[in-house]
Amino acid sequence: MAERIQRSKGSDRDSSRVESSAADLDATTEQGDRLKAEMDDILDEIDDVLETNAEDFVKSYVQKGGE
Amino acid sequence: MAIPKVCGIETEYGILVRGADPNPVAASSILINSYVAAAHRIDWDFVDEHPGQDARGFSWEESLAPDVEPQLVNAVLTNGSRYYVDHAHPEISTPECRSASQATLYDRAAEEIVRRSMSLARSVMPEGAELLLYKNNSDGKGNSYGCHENYLLDRGVPFGRLVSEITPHFVTRQVFIGAGKVGSEFPGDSPSDVAFQISQRADFFEEEVGLETTLKRPIVNTRDEPHCDPLKYRRLHVIVGDANMSEVATFLKLGTTSLVLAMIEDGAIDRDLSLADPVRAIREVSHDPTLRQTVSLRNGKRMSALDVQWSLLEMAERYASSRGLECLGGDGPAIITLWHEVLNGLSTSPESVADVVDWVAKKRVIDAYAERHGLEGYDVRTKALDLQYHDMRPEKSIAARVGLRVDCAASDVKRAMVEPPDDTRAYFRGRVLAKWPESVVAANWDSIVFDVGRDPLRRVPMMEPLRGTRDLVGDLVDRSADVTELLERLGD
Image (tube, rainbow over all chains, first blue to last red; front, side):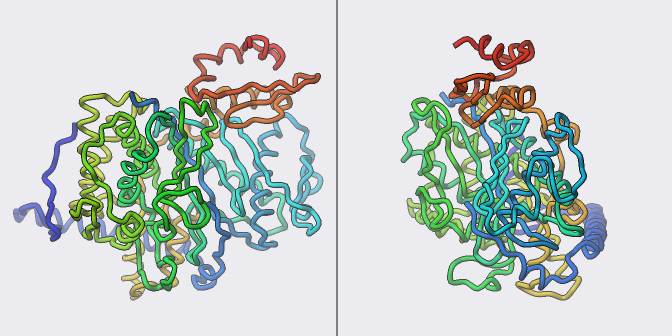
């Protein structure tokens, strides 16, 4: 069975739950940069394929009700 | 004792027509007919003299003629699937599958069948015209269409207990199977009241339990058409889920639900997670992408959707240890591991599960796009992104560009487009359709009608979902030269 990781029951969910050392922080920033770069690439690609006229597209997207 | 969780999933697709008459019923018919005609081209001489015409006798122009009632297409495919027009949508149902992973594979195959149909339809449509298909659940204007799951259950489980014990899962599982949506469609709201919500379908649910599927939708649907032995089995028809682009989300949807249903069959739900107001809760959970809000339980406590899911998982882990998970067709350990992994990710850092949870992937892209272009709240451009996430064109689909995890091998998906599962009655249906298409007069979930070349037609009932498998009838089908011989060998 997978190891049970302690989970917060409080309503305040703090995203930085892991104690960080300086090295960890560097790794986190590096990972953050990488994710941002990935997202930029994804956005560039999306800008290329996104419907040219968003308003027309959204307006024209009408369906009959189904089940 | 929990019975094997045979399951399947059926999806209604959104459909738009570009460059031609927008009649969605005719368009859906053309889509399906194009595929079915092409599937049979191996046997038929197809002479492509008239681009708009097909040897099967349908054409774009004919389908649209005002005096011609478009016949509602209803085809059965050689992989055991059913492909048909439901209301004004093309719908495709997987065959009966022995496990969640198998149903996920056949859902992927269904997507590829739809994509192939789109290409084929272009060849019978006017120049430059095309059909656009969307694997989602609403148009943003209050019209919704479904992605339904089906599960085989022991008839002996009292329906009342089934309803109370499955509802908490139906209300809260959206935290990992929600496909995300820009805007509100809750009656009385205006779309811009909600920038982003977790579920496509939540706003459309108005009842806890009921028979309807197209209005006043109930969280638990009471439709009782088992399509198999009604004394032994119930087919639970589930209408509350979102259609997923993430195949891992589809697997989790089918897998966790199969597991919770098995626990219900075995009386293993020992915590009362009943919600005070499930209809209100399903919307509250959907409208809270922070996952922090709690909902009221009937016992007065408040729990977050995530905590309800953690409770279900905890019961499932104990159930797995004490009873085993054979009824899940080999998927048990994978379902539990993945369920745990996803809940963990959602509890600590939702972005970490952007590769499996559709709403997280979609929201991440929408938030980044909004930041790049200086947008805030509800915006028609983020709504366009939302819709295009579900575009079935590979060159346009946003879901195909956000790094979703893919587990199904392309070669397996390709094979599943034409071959049925080995281990359910879909095997028999698919094999006979492939081998003797001209002798099969009608094929349904629970019977096949053969034309043996003389009166009367012969009907073979298939009331047991786990018979008609490769093990039981494969040899028999292989060795029979024609349906007369097949029926003789089948005995009674």
